[in-house]
Image 1 (tube, one colour):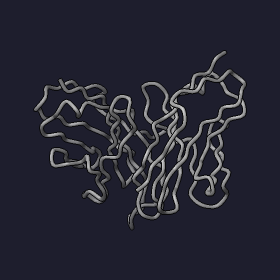
Image 2 (cartoon, rainbow over the protein chains, first blue to last red):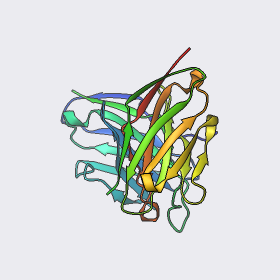
Image 3 (spheres, chains in turn red, purple):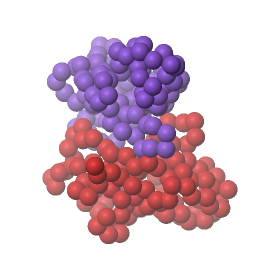
Image 4 (cartoon, rainbow over the protein chains, first blue to last red):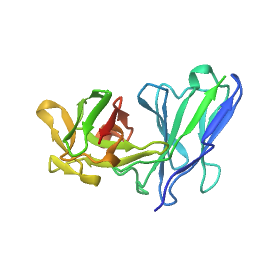
Length: 119
Length: 114
């Protein structure tokens, strides 16, 4: 069964360093998402991406964050200068969508997450 | 803006007993509602969803949920708990036609006692 994969499973970095979290969405999906969950808090939406551009982003997704689909299979989240408060589990998700746009109510398939620890 | 409240961060049930997980939402537009389950060291997996039509929705693993607009609720139930149901459960909402961003509740961790 197709699944979303994420690498690495754990990432430890120093404050101020850049990190790139990688995701491989399900191959025929058109919509991609990043969510994060700070320990003990709710899962929060960061950004959605379609047709090589951001379709929606949250207030959390400020200038230190960026997303990219560098090739036909990977979807990355870059944090330019990490802060202590960026420590969280980051989930990638993908949904099927249509060429004309999103399918409302589409199931989002989630990866297992990357646990980011900023020291 | 949308929000989701899950009553009870932890629920303990005996094997074979009813599982009831409560979810209430707030939405200014007709919502689409979801329940996801997360097993240890895995991603979130969709249990069931409500978009339109029948308000009682059946999902995988014997779970079902009922959309009650008057109560702004979408509670999840399973008649008979199994040890394999031990996991964390998340209720989520999207604004329907206005987009697919999921807004999650805080999650409920279910412990099943033998």
